[in-house]
Image (cartoon, rainbow, N blue to C red; front, side):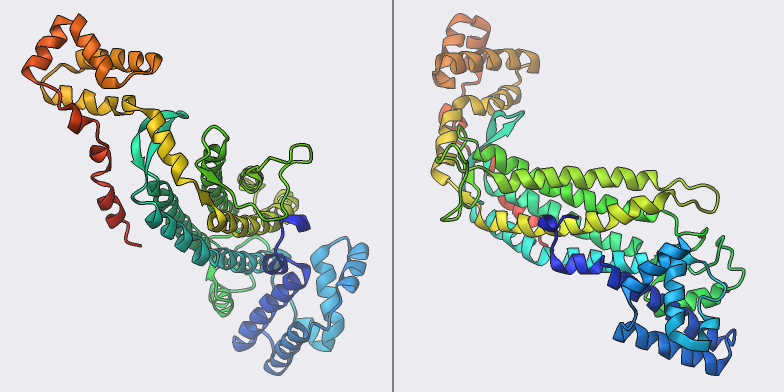
Length: 443
């Protein structure tokens, strides 16, 4: 991922130094288990494990040397083994015994994914409280709801934030599931049949690494696990996109109910100094699109030839660090948007008034239905009155009264069941259950 969309901690997790450190860690775990099972002579095995630990902790290996060897071997991991062997002496004979490169590469990769998911989860400590606080702050602010971009019915502004908070909780749970999916490793050999490293030895080595054994592996860990992890990341991106899309709509000049924070020396346009554009939300929407495109590539990686081919490798070198790094950036910028978001309560009120009485047409329709009026007939009357009220700019009550004067059937209906307009034209019906909605979301 380009530096503009990268933060230091996540970039470090997917850096080459950490990658090599994890490969050494996996090799060390294997040596320790093979030594305890007397596959490797005890003295040599213990000495080798200590050398690997020292090499990992002191980082006395050279990435430049590794890449130089790779140019000769044309094999990234064999170059790594050759570089490590130069530091180990005669005990290197017992290094990487009975396993294949994917045993180390895939297991190290899963440790990276674990660390990446844990880093992503830290953002929820910042995101969820601000959403909950905003939901509480605006729980009594009446607004006009919109469907299809059009005025719909009254609701409260705080429910927007509460909905986003609820989805945030689901995304937190999904990332916890992604952590589970990333908790499997494999050290089962070239075709996954444990020919040289027994199931018991594999299980013990993975346990040292904090991983579970992939129940049935091939040369690689099945790639549906990777796709599952990236699916959870993409859903988090979709959550951010949903919120940012709403903010962008509400910030439009003709709506004007919210504004992104705008700093003192910030500029909105090179040509139009008056502009305050929702640039952070637009940026995050674009990032979400990119994140989703990586998921498609992860799905393509699931089908490999026989026990393994290499078609997944080039894809994962890009989509894994990029997806984690990008979402880490997105979470951080998203939190800033929410913290600095300005809500124009006066404009919210003005738009509610602008929506007018026609936004209560559903309430009138329901009242006619409760009075026994057939729904089709009731709908026809209410729709006619609502269209007249909208086109002529008059109250719904006046339009409905005009309609009744011209329609004997409607007059008869209203004579038997008069409309309590004073009660009907209040927003309370649409808001009476809001407290319960808040109350049931306890997390």
